[in-house]
Image (cartoon, rainbow, N blue to C red; front, side, top):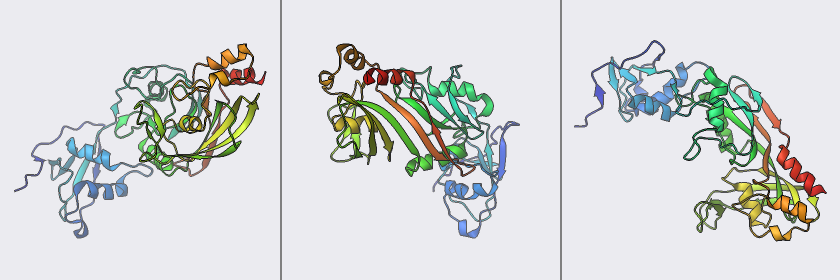
Amino acid sequence: MIMEKIYLIKKKMTMEDTIFLLPEATAAENNMRLDKFLTLKLPEILPVGEVMSRSRLQKLILSGNLTLDDVIIADNSRKVKTGDAYVLNVPPAEEADPVAENIALEIIYEDDDLLVVNKPAGMTVHPAAGAWHGTLVNALLYHCAENLSGIGGVKRPGIVHRIDKETSGLLVVAKNDFAHQNLSEQFAEHSIERTYWAVVYGVPQPLEGTIEGNIGRSPFDRKKMAIVQSGGKTAITHYKTLQIFAHTAALVQCQLETGRTHQIRVHLSSKGYALIGDKVYIKNHKSELALPAEIKNYVNSFPRQALHAKSLGFIHPRSGQFMQFDSDLPADMQQLLQKLER
């Protein structure tokens, strides 16, 4: 006999909990898995514009937030029976683990669903080992304050995509589940428009084109990504040379068709055009600079990879309107270009 996880006690609820009374299960839904049934039925009763993922539902069930005839059901795989009328309790969003910190942010655009931020170089996007404070998430928690409705039931900004710590530029961040799910789908479909500007050693030949090559963990250094012969994920970068400096360096525009970890850095480096300042993927380019000593030393000591997420385009999750944003190069990259132009 299979023992179902049914508890004959009521879960303590607060005045802030939201209660959803689900429609009775029909004969066509008899023996349907419980979490699948809820995923099917919830859109019928959720407020317009709100969504809830299946994983979120599963967590709510396991934490005792679903009842049938006042009995808690904590089994996602339970089979629904005809006539079952479940009640789902959704607690208010929990406080996020990262600490809100008053860190200045350059907000390019903001509304109730999302915001677009121009991240400075040197700022990590998400807290992790060795960087629990001073991150973009810490700053957003403070900036958004009570304007986060919760991602997966937790008051946190929805980080849909990331850029490296030492890369500057534009990021879109979701404020709620609806925006987070929609933007995530756009990224998965590679429909988001992303353009980066990079300053590289050498001059790409041809001056514009497409670089393709699956990207995965380097078999020789697990801390690096690399173009791999087998496995990895499809990666496509379209590039165009915008400016050439003394036939020894170039400003290159890169448009991502896919978005893999370190994609631009790996692709350009694989063709012999490593980013100036890139300490990870740079090869022996420094001695090749045909520049005056002062400028050569400045370029070779540039403190970060010269890469900036310059433009970002996507369809707004709620309005359906296409939105395009652009940001100026940060001061350090502008100075780098000025040095090279000499």
